[in-house]
Image 1: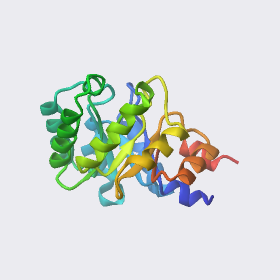
Image 2: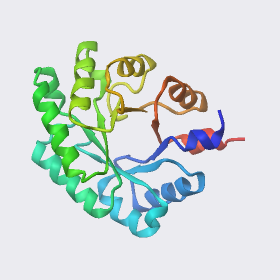
Image 3: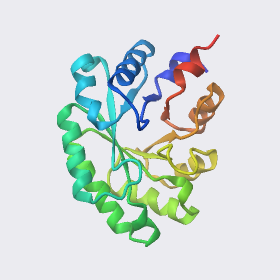
Image 4: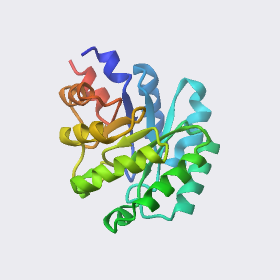
Length: 216
């Protein structure tokens, strides 16, 4: 698969606990050089990235990250703040406790509330699949679809596991037409990226794309 094509599907990511402004600016410069789909950065750096690079850069940030157990009001406020700062895309973490209690209507309502707060910006919903049963994953495909989100996303990269091909196949069978798939977590090699794109993912979340795709 052509390197430029792979880069065009990558959300170039830095979400380490010790992420600095210098880390984010270096990431943004790499993203522009390699024409990645976006950069995915912590919320506190969104304004600085947009101020520095403007429309040359698509900025994604994370909401309710990484555990998802903030209240809906907090997630909505986080989203509104990120959009006001210049975020183009939002990756939110669902309330996994609600999933485990079977409160899928509440999960759907929260996703819908965050989608409204996006003000038309792209919303990706992180379900953290490593913690879920197959039945829960299927139910969440319905939640994401019904709430009007743009993407279902496998993982934060902070859980006990990351993206696996079986989850992509499951999502494809149960999401509505128009909902896309983002694979993230543990994707580090060209082969990994190619495989997930061939499975039907539209985005790949990884911090390792530049190293993997430009070596040699």
